[in-house]
Length: 94
Image (tube, rainbow, N blue to C red; front, side, top):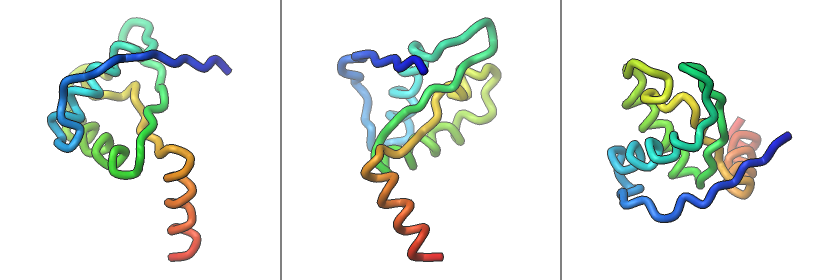
């Protein structure tokens, strides 16, 4: 498995708003591997709130024309610590 890490620097966008998260994800789209219209999915990690905002941003762009503009190459995933917390909630609630 090839692990690619990139330093993207500072993105001037508000991560607390849907519009800001869309701007951030559009910047991250430059790092998504693609071949023509086909895109490969890469994990985009964040805490639970950031993942929720990324999912909202993908929903907001769901009707765009191209896979890149729909943000299909970015898959929101909670970081390990937050993933464990979510799994504990699922286990104990159900």
